[in-house]
Image (cartoon, rainbow, N blue to C red):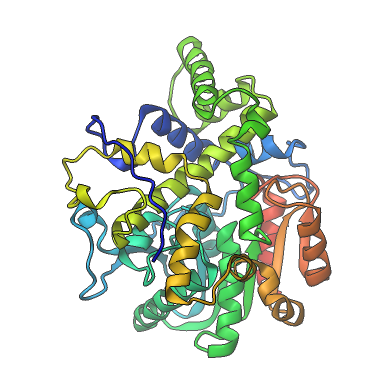
Length: 443
């Protein structure tokens, strides 16, 4: 298997990979809090942000967030695959975690698939869980197959990013969970949904099930999907290059943002460091489109770098971690690996790691096939013919281009509902969007 090496000199710093550097941590925490702050209220569509980058980063103002009704506390569950070997450094993640919210008595069940790098209990996932539970569904929330925990505990091939393999893994896990839930509560019928990359997975899972018939999904709802995984992530990666930043480096740009946030924090009259304060801070700090694109790109890159590190260690591929560095222990400095992983674009990962790995499994695999099979073009006929697959999104989604929008309109026709504003998942918690989402599922 000819995987290129990205070995480097390991220096000091006793930090764990997931908490790699202060910069990365700060931005990650900020994004986790802010990218998921959404809102809603009325019946008319008056989503406040017309700039797609602002919409993607700001979400929806807290006082406008849709309130699904009485809150439910999802139950944390886990699956352990007997005999699966997990590297010692990931021993804390040997179980695949997911969450459920089950009704008392018979109800339809909906699986929710998280977006890139997101966990089953991420803020957007918790929101969707509350929405669909409030609408009368049993809910099962699953992490993205690109999340570290899924890679470590459940991925058969261990190299996420190739959609057919990721869908294989999700489908297998969903069958196990189906048995667990049906033993506890009666299920009347099955549904599936997901947002962002999870929406693409939902469509492929519906297609897979149309061949296997294990679930017989009544409806598959795609929320803000990419059309081509490769083209969308290439766009996100470009925002961390000179194309967006000019002569400024990514780290310099992040440092500038942190300085501005620090100034605001220092001068603010803080009563509670809650979502409202974080939302207020991000929306009041003066950020232009370059700043906003950088934040979106960094959010994606953080997810991708965690995925790449987990993949490399699980497969012992020698891409990031040289063979001489094994065994990795909990006391070993991991920051150098984190920083090296952060510098890898998805295209680099695809060309240097994923494609050689797939060619090792199947010598006939080529770059075009990888890209094609990780796009909705690969199941275009199914999507055109199946009226059970519906789509909701925005025409100003920052991960889509004109060709993607033309594909969505031509393939889905009236089964697609596109709002003029909202960016990428920015209006996902906004009232009219949520109401339309529920109406499309219950058609």
